[in-house]
Structure formats: structure tokens, C-alpha cells
Length: 309
Image (cartoon, rainbow, N blue to C red; front, top):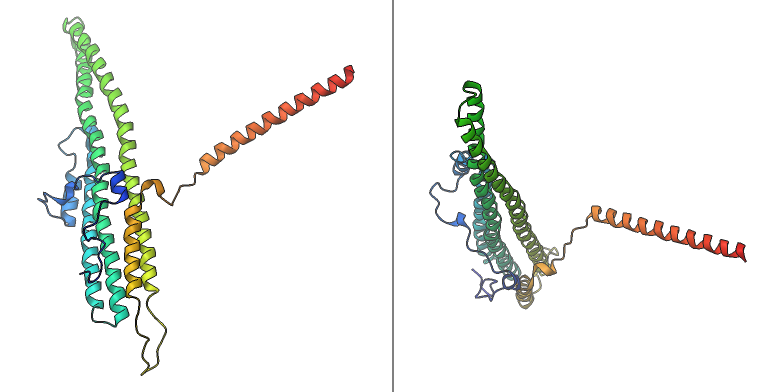
């Protein structure tokens, strides 16, 4: 495809890959028993959690829905690479400037498909981490059910056989079950918060990297478009000879270097939080009030000293 230079030609690991090694390949890329169409998506979503514990059903469905999202992104990535090839193929027989620029644009668009493929693998880290919450939810369910079952048995015996010796035995079992349940519930609470935070950190880091790299590619793509002479010509007039081969190749090289050197530490888009600003403003106001109070006290002390004098 790439007649002059390719972004994917035996490249060394990028700075972001050295900073954070790429995750293993996504589980959506293999083992497709049910295919990749919308029917398969609907089937996976509707059957998620059917056989599992009640406590974990909702999260199990979310995990399956996220797998559908990843399969959709995988399809987009594959189609993106195919369109890049087709763009280069279409422009090959055009004028020199059109041929060169469309080929280089194809290189950039093909790279977008590659980035989307990498995004899937990193996004899968988020989904796999969510699954760990689902697993702990499933493990807590039996302890809840056991405690409830013993409670129901005690209530039934107290109603039917108030003097039954089984009541004392069941109450002792209930004490043990409640202790086990407390441990399980605390573990669920801790792991839910830990894994929820970790999973969405994975997701937002991958989104941030993907978005900023797309913005870089868009910028270099627009630089390539500047090499096209779009000034109108009259019938019979000849356009000046195209001399942008070196420039277009350099744009691709610069794009590759920019993508390879990008890291999360050097992300250009930073969030602006109004909540934090309001908190800081409150602190500033408190400091100003304290300063005014100190000034008033000092003034009063000076007045007293003058009166005594």
C-alpha cells in the first residue's frame, strides 16, 4: 500500500508503550462462536447473568455490553484500514499531487485504524477489572442467602414450635453466618471501590491517549492538504509541476515521531474543575477574613497603647 513511507514499518516501541507496556490482546479478537453481528450482540446482552447470582446480574450484563462495544470498535478499526487502502488505490492514477497526497492521507488513516485496534486492548483492561467486582458480588450472594435461610427457619420454628431445641442451634448458626456475612460485605465494599476506581482509570487513560493521538493525526492530515494546489485553472491551462514529495514524506515522519513520543505525562488537554476553584476561593476568602481580623486586633492594640501613653 504505502509506496514511499509507512508509519507501521518496523517501528520501535513508542514512548507511551515504554512508559506503560501494552496489555495483552483483547478477548474479543478470538473465540467468536456466535459471530460479530447485531444478533450476536443482542444474544450476549440478553443472556448475561441469567444463570448467575441475583446480586451480580446487573454488572454481568454491563460486562457483556462492554464486550459488544469492543467488538463494534474492532469492526470500525478493520473497516478504517480498508478505506485507507482504497483511498490510496483511488488516488494512484490521479495527477502527481493528488496521487502523492492521497497516498500519504491513506497512511494516516490506516494509522487511525491501528490506534483503534490498540485502544481495544487497553479498553479491555477496564472490562476485565469490572469483572473482578462481578466475581466478588457472586461470592457474597451465598452468604446472604444462608443468613436469610437461617433467619426464616428460626421464625418458622418460633411460630410452629416455640419450645423446639432446634431454635438454639439455629441461633448459634445465625451468629456464625452473620459474622461470615460481615466479613464478606466488608470485602465487597472495599473491592468494589478499589476496582471501580482502577477500571475507569484504565478506560479514561485509554480514551485520553486515543483522542490526543487522533488529534495529532488530524493536524498532520491538514498539513498534507496544504500541499494540494486548489487554485482554479482555465481550460487548456497547465498546473505548475508538483514538488511536494519531500514535504509530504516529512509530514508523515513528523507524525510518526509525534505519536511515538506521546505519553500521558505530556497530555495537552487538562480538565478545568470549577469545584476545585470554588474550594480554593473559599480558602482564599477565609485567609482574607483571618488577615482582616488580625489587622483589626493590631489596630486596637495600637489604640490602647496610645491611650495609655
